[in-house]
Length: 153
Image (cartoon, rainbow, N blue to C red):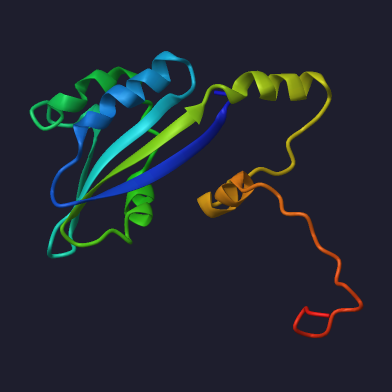
């Protein structure tokens, strides 16, 4: 595993996990974009109690719609990881906790290593930062020294 690893916790109202996401995950794997390392389905009951199952160890009757993902998983999360990452879920909700490797990044990592470089920092930018980058830059206007404080002459 040489790619960057990421996770996402996605919460859904009610006691359900939308299995219609599976084909989209499969497409990302089939294209070689990601490698799924772990998938945990979590339920936070109305009482606040958490229950979850990892796909690799799930009762097959509970995980039937997710079965096609079974062979891809490594099982990288511990019970403490799951408890810590899901503590903020709303009572009466379900969630999917997905860990993946960005396999597209492996060749980049290898190229950096061959060039004698090393990654010294990496991170994620919040969506709002990325959204701001989509707006065209606005030229800065220099203040007009002849204008008064209201911007008029």
